[in-house]
Structure formats: C-alpha cells, structure tokens
Length: 264
Image (cartoon, rainbow, N blue to C red; front, side):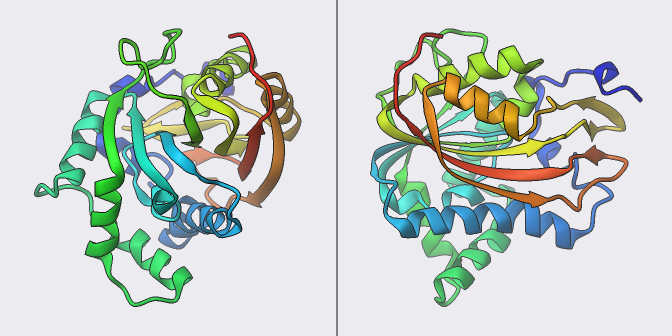
C-alpha cells in the first residue's frame, strides 16, 4: 500500500492503550524493550551523566502517556511540565502521578534504571521522586501559535520529545513549523532531546494503518538547523520492529543546542 494513502490518526483522539497497541502488536517483547524503553533510557542516562544538561525547567512533549524517558533525567531539573495531546492521556498520567488504581505499571523501566545505576531496585522511591518533580500535566495543540494556549509557560532549559513529530506532521513543511514552535518554548542555550524515526511508513491501531511522516537524516538535520538548533550528538540504531503493524527502518536520538531564535 502506498504510504500516502494511509489515514491520519490525530493525537487528540489517542486513548492510553493506543501507545501499547501500535507497533507493540506482533512484535517480539525483546525488541519492544530494547528499542522503546532501553534505548531511550540508556541514551538519556548518558546525557545526564555528562553534566551538560541542567536548569530549572524541563518540558516533555511526547506521543502517549509514558514516564520511562523521564526517569534518567528528572533529578537534574527543579520542575517538569508534561504536555499531552489527548484528554485521556492527560487523565492517565494524572492517575499515575496520584498513584491511583489501574494506572500503568512502569516497573520494567525502573528496573532498567536501577541496572544502569548499579543500585538495588527501589521502584517506589524512584517513581515517587519523579512524581514530586512533575508540577503540571497540560493539554497542548500544535495548530495554535502558542501550543499551550491559554497557558503561557516559562522558557524551558530543556525540551524532551519522543516521536511526536512523526504523528502530528503531515509533511516536511509542517515538521519544520512545529520544530520552530518547540524552539520557542526553549531559552537560548537550552537543549532539545529528540527521539525520532528514519524511513518510517505506517503504524496500526485497531487493524487500520495510519500515517507516519517519513523523514531521513538529511531532512531532520535541515529542519533542526532552520529552527535555530545545532546538533551536538546523533545516535542511530536499526529497528527490528518492522512487521505488519508498523514499518520503520531506524530509530534516532538527537541532542541539539538552541543557538538562535527563529520566527514561526
């Protein structure tokens, strides 16, 4: 099927279970853990250990109600603000923050962090510390000039983003515009920590294939440069999760410094 014929699945329609039912379906649990959790946690743990990322405010803007990517770096920041596209995902994260029943169990991610740190497994302590650092869980919308309108956020020292641009952007022009909107959330000298996909084509929810924006290394580098960023580090791994439910060739992690302001 031509990727251009796949439907758009808007993130404001997401239910919490959708993030676990897309490329997770029909995929070996070993590869899910390696790519969707371990790769992310390991890269951010390395970044945290380098001491180059610091400040008061971290803004997280990611696809789905995850918390595993915050575990390696939350202690660096005084305050974390999470932005979500879906009301249901906001609700699910609020449930987790307040330790309500039936919230998602992130024990597997916490155990990876404990392994990296070489410490004994203290899942409740780590999650509770993260909960205390999360000050706001807000709805956002990339169709607005200020994506958190009517809330005006303080400029962040760091923005962390997992895969969201591939889902909200129809084409490369929209990808560039949305990167600029994210750049506007950052202070000069702040960092963008970006996880993305190279040569992705589709993912599946409920048996239907949906659009993923296809990007490659060159197009992402150009978009970041146009949004005022300088890439300081780029890590790429080949994906083993290509199957009938999801197609992507590579997963990437980029650490980029905001060097200049841009006009959206």
